[in-house]
Image 1 (tube, rainbow, N blue to C red):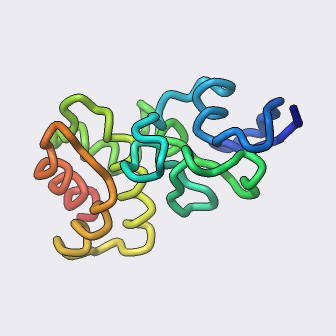
Image 2 (image 1 turned 30 degrees about the horizontal axis):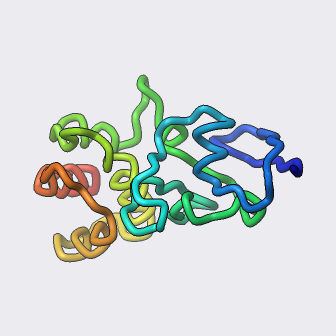
Length: 150
């Protein structure tokens, strides 16, 4: 075991874990953050997406020892009193059915909109292409991202 101090959602957190422990496990098990989800464990579905220094990262495939920057999870994106525009848009558009993919969709879209605040429909679709939704709420998700961009 080794000691790692991470900056997560604006606060420093120290954990005792093996260096190869996936960041996702640290976030969920040690820091009790439930935004990132375990989906596939292979960085293919996007459910575990977080931001590391503002860039989306699949936390299931990032060892805690490799994390050098600020980690932001869904919980750190906004608050219930002051949600991020994407969080508010997802609620307004009822863009989650089971909600399992919502973390990855929101975190991926937030990083994308930070780089491209006025995207086209095709750009939104391309940005979210690597995130899987098994419920079929893709059209609502696209509307939510368009709403947040507006």
